[in-house]
Image (cartoon, rainbow, N blue to C red; front, side, top):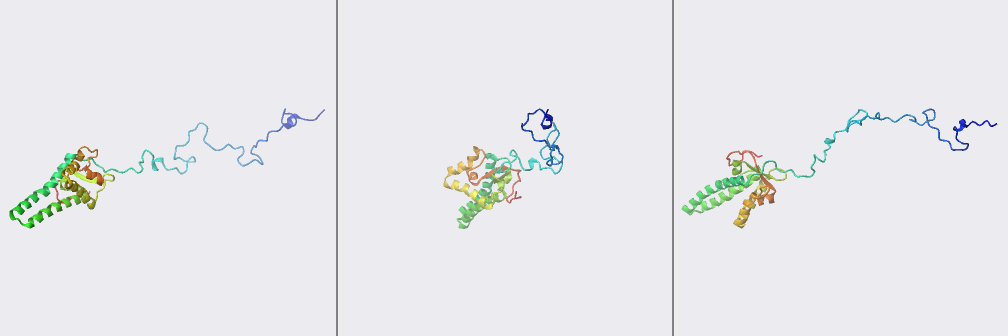
Length: 228
């Protein structure tokens, strides 16, 4: 009779069969953490919302702080704020500016014809060109001429809404003059272009990148009352 006990070598397994490795129970010789379930939320609980620390410590910054694709419009130009001016309003401002120049010029011309003095001839040219240059510089430096201030208009850069500056204002006015000096038809086309243009721009506006917008009227003033 043999003294072999099957329970001592794994129960009913036959002699010589491979034995499963012993499972650690957290006792002596067990690796650290063996037998201890990993920490985590209880079964069925909801995960913490974005920005909340699982341990209740320092929270992450909200997603909106970094800017979402829906909120950010990278590289998009900022257009000039304000309602675009209609052609009739722009034409009214131009007529007022021309009357300020034209009426005194007619008086000077009458004196020139009556006296045949060269002084009045030179004065007429100086008055006409000098006032036109002044109006153009005012549009660039302050955004408006006397006629524009009276009807409530302002000229700004299309992409930024900022003023042109006196130098570029002069260039813009020069383009308007060149169109008429080359031929009457190009000047009229430039003058009438806002009638069918989507942004109510003249051709000189498109070249300079400007738009004319509506602002509160300031009343008549030869000198600008404000710079913005």
